[in-house]
Amino acid sequence: MEDELEPDQKVIKKDIVVDGVDFDKITKDLKTARIISPAYAGNKSELTAILLYTYQTFQFGYQGREDIAKQLEEISIQEMTHLEWLGQMLIRLGVAPIYTHFPPIPANFFTTRFVPYNSNQIMMIKLDLQGEKQAISDYERMIEILNNEPVKKVIQEIVKQEKHHVEILTKILEDLEAEHK
Image 1 (cartoon, rainbow, N blue to C red):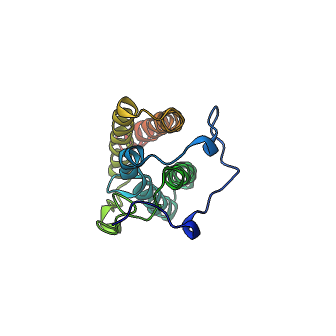
Image 2: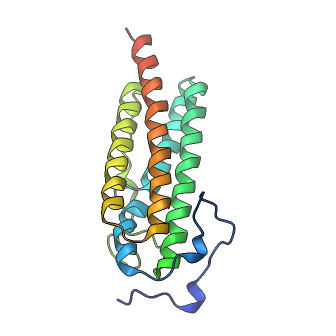
């Protein structure tokens, strides 16, 4: 399977903004694409996080916790931004950002079985915290091996935002546990 994009597959957004990064300076680099692609649509990816937080937004809303539902919705939207950044970088790195573990290889397609469905409020937030901490660890490992500076800067920004998610989720969990004592 060829790793390169066909000319008609190159859809590049020009208004992507990450402080200090010019996305247009990211050029073909298949090694970097392979390093970051699992974060795009693997089993523990931004796509999984988006679907999980959206599901949980519905669950918390249905259970009368609009306050928590709103916070999870906002995290989901930020995860969508991460997915967009990763997808736009993959295009520039030379691969089509299809929903597989290693784009553009049409195997190991993303599946919703990766989403851990639960309706227990405390368990949902514990799963979220576990996922965010794993994402931070995975991204930090990427940063250590990346040689592509613009991509590294984007991943560093994602880590910063994921750490903020941990702070939000930790507070939610503390409040939920206090309510259930």
